[in-house]
Amino acid sequence: MPGFDEIDRKILEILQRDADLAVNALADIVGLSPTPCWRRIKRLEEAGVIKGRVAIVDHARANVGMTVFIGITAPRHETAWLNQFRALIDDLPEIVEAYRLTGATDYILKVVVPDISTYDRVYKAMIERLDFSQINSSISMEELKFTTAVPSTYL
Image 1 (cartoon, rainbow, N blue to C red):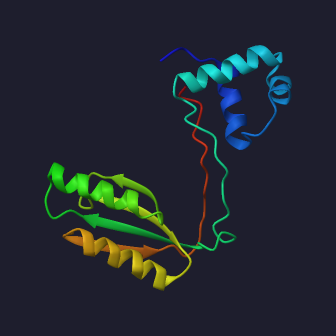
Image 2 (tube, rainbow, N blue to C red; image 1 turned 135 degrees about the vertical axis):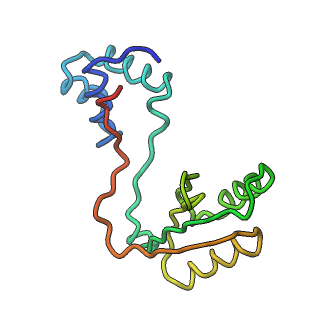
Image 3 (cartoon, rainbow, N blue to C red; image 1 turned 45 degrees about the horizontal axis):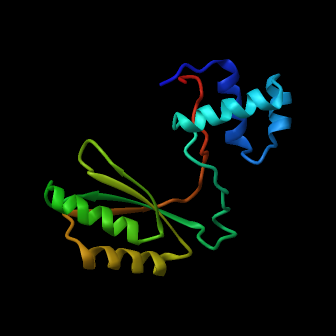
């Protein structure tokens, strides 16, 4: 990975807060002229540090205010099962995050839905398509912290 400096880290921090900020404004903040600032952004993109730019949607206003975390234990650890599981989670748009874990729980999913009956539909769609040893669901009561920003300190 190419070396990045404090200005690159500052650019990354600012873009994580506001990806719509004009290059001219960003350049002023970090003390560069627009062209070198734009080159640094492109270098961050080419290095894969910046993977894309998206709009962050308010879950409640998009009518998916219920967040459910699903812990899954696989019935067997095989590539075929994992590939079917990957296809399953790709097919269900309510599953917005999925992670393979160490420990007693093999996978954790983050699901956003409008209500419990919609979650039940997602659950049934999952168990109709694939076998699981165990599924544990936890409904989020309150979001204490949410960010898409990662620390730039380690860049």
